[in-house]
Length: 360
Ligand code: PLP
View (tube, rainbow, N blue to C red):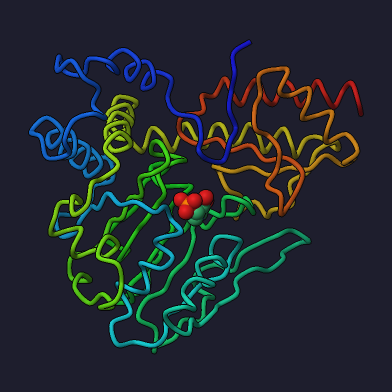
């Protein structure tokens, strides 16, 4: 059977990209070596690096006054890098608490400042919900406002884009970048670990508005100083070259699919199919208010959780992998990033309906 991998990350990559990697692995560009064995300063690799950046700029329409940084350390390193780079002499930053990852960012920020924590978790009609942006009580003493538009574990999302005037908005887009159009101008900094919607783990993307560079805490590691990275084209230290190369292939693949607008349509169709299957059955449930449902990470529970183990065993046997929910929430979770084809979600919903019929 064909395998569909619903892992939240590291996650499924486009098959066509992996086939290309395989085809050119041992003899890349006729050099007789693989791309991961050549210097990051060689002209061949610099071309890879520059092309990847340009393709990403094209895909997201990143304005010229934003720097694109290819970093390491994952999104969690950015939980520290954001306050260290942006606070300057400020002692406070606004942190929107909407779920597990936003909360983790708050814990890390506490090492650098006193975050103003703004809890937006609520319930509406008995469903899990997040307060809309016009109800966020932002503070004037804040150097920036940080939020997480897609909570990978909670399966919640804020799809509206920020419109907070001069405030510097920082967004953790780890699990939603490249899945739908973004207006980069509304953000001061965007960051994302690569291992969900971009490429292999080990690479972290940072998109930062130029005027925000240059006020990093002096004692902070240079490898996470945005200005140092920008001044050195993300090659201050040796970058994760293989992940950078492979992400570049994913960017090319995205362009060939029709870009971000096409991806957004594709992702909407997958999410609609999966949520409607859940909603139209008494056997499964998702407790998130429709407005705040993530289109990338879909948690769902079986009404009878005694069947969880059987569901997971049978789903793996059917080629549907990694559906076990995160340990802090239990149940199931299907992550359906860009690389998940519609057929994968169709295979999942067919399996779910059949399982419900047999065990309902
Ligand atoms: N933020 C979000 C939204 C995530 O989904 C993750 C996932 O792992 C992280 C942060 C942490 O990322 P990393 O493991 O790259 O540090």
